[in-house]
Image 1 (spheres, rainbow, N blue to C red):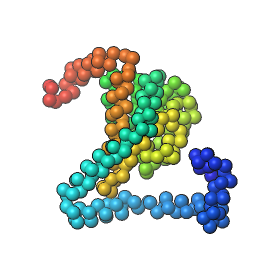
Image 2: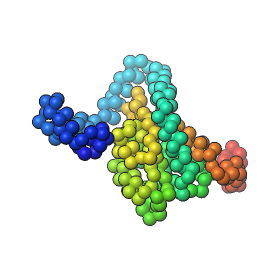
Image 3: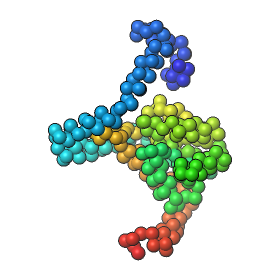
Image 4: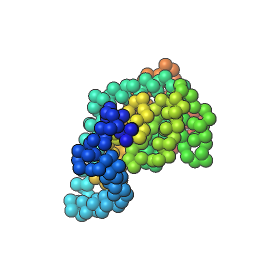
Length: 252
């Protein structure tokens, strides 16, 4: 209750008065309504898969393709709000001044973190992807973080409990958090120095990461353009090293 009242910028007693105003005995009863609602979402993917099958049977594959493409376009347009543009600018400034940048994402959000770290590695030596394999990534953030560091965190519903725990730990260590998330009230947004809001709803049964992926690409593009290093020389050197390894089949 204290956290919610703080986010709403009201005294905790206001939450109790709100519950009584809508006919409940107190805040605990109001809280149970929301808990029951969250529990009811446990089978959300399954019911959405059923709806997707029915949609395809009703309107055909071409219409499903159009709906998914139009949905992505609309969400990208919503992403370009004034608040987001300002948050992206703050995020780029944080990235440019960081001693070390840690990239975190779990499950489908891992792809967003990976894309940022992969592209950034062409010109930046201080970007690290935190992976779960062998726990090496987690150990690095436990033992090596500094208040001069920045964590780029992608956290979308359903929120990963482990990711929230790691983000909270980093925040407690003084690491500044950039959150790519769906709401200013999400668990990671509450810890963030810069919050970039994206939506992840889709006609498919599983949530989309298209807007979040675009944000990661925008951030790394602006980071490269804002770098104090010779970005062109760094990118060229990395590319030459990959060429020497025969990394690209079409250029071998």
